Image 1: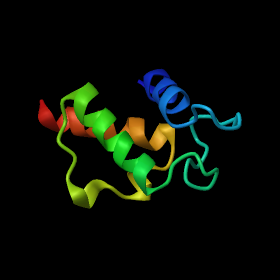
Image 2: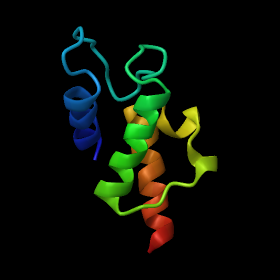
Image 3: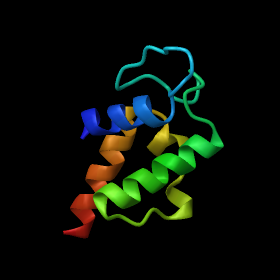
Image 4: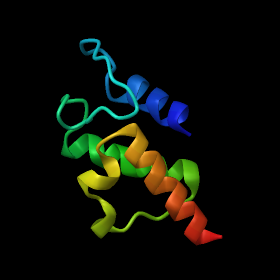
Length: 82
């Protein structure tokens, strides 16, 4: 899952821009990789790829600020959906 999210970010949010090095625990907001529009793109990516509905209350930095946080959030949502 982390690899899929990382690839999405690299291909869709960093395209044409400067190369930014980041790992699974890097803050996507602090590095300027995502802004409010980028967060919404991540929300759509998660909803479409993992068949989840993301509540507005869940769109917070604690869930979307790094690849690791986003992966943990998605796994928790998937576990609840079972």
